[in-house]
Image (cartoon, rainbow over all chains, first blue to last red; front, side, top):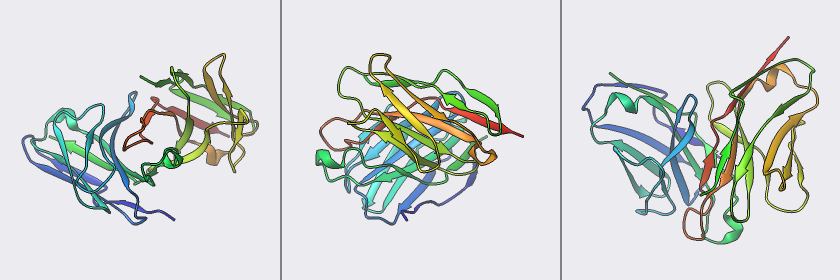
Length: 118
Length: 117
């Protein structure tokens, strides 16, 4: 089974701190994603990456950056945490060769990191 | 832009009763639709998907969804629910293009299904 591991289940940080959320997948997937999940808003895409060192903005990238130095690891960075970034963060990965046949490969999610910024 | 709408934020139902979770989509191009389920304290997992062909798709645990192009809907149904079906259900549409990230998904706001005895 695909395993997507997020380093922390719960995290509490102070306003202005730099925060790193780590995600590792063990299935050699090309694509990796960061979503945030908020009640009543569902999941919103922050950033995604389809290859090492490649990244693209999602729907709500402001206040975030990402890093993908190795294929299995995708990090989300909050440069200066703010209270409105308190949320559940979900990492996902999927198979993706860039060929149309891989476009509908399922996303595999981690269990999430609940971040509270005080 | 493609999007999905889940009108019901919560659906309470008694065990062994039927249930329908509604999802409507908007898209101007080919549509690829998905249902994901999130059990308490877990990440999301794929329940079923519609890519092409038969408009009725089924999951291994008794859920089914029907793609209805004229009504732009992809409702999820189960004829008899169990306590273990209590979870949040998300409808999603593939919004990626032909370049990298082709399977980027746009999710709905979710429907919390609560099955009661």
